[in-house]
Amino acid sequence: MSQLELHSKMKPDGEFSDVLAKALLVEIYSEWEEYFRPRFATAIGTEKNMVRCDLLGDLRQIRNCIVHDRSTLATKHTKLTTLRWSLKPGPLLVTKDMFSTFVDQANDLEVTVEP
Image (cartoon, rainbow, N blue to C red; front, side):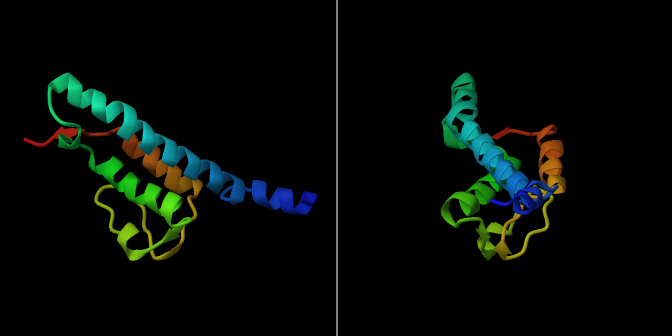
């Protein structure tokens, strides 16, 4: 890789920040699904699938796009409930503003339990 190409990939909203943001989003969802959600369910005596979080449900859609569809958004990935991202079908690029929006919303995370 040339220095020019390296410099381009290191720019804000460049390839490196996109890859890092996507890796973090996938990890955050995995921690929710494999660690936190089951422990919430156990603590309150219910099934894991009864513990819900709209924001992390939206993150599941983003994770599926990243992991299964090689970061190519399909219409099914653009129908978000809570996450304030404006998405349209095509390549997914996670910008610093998008990641900041997710973090801001995660700071006000709400978890519900279905009856």
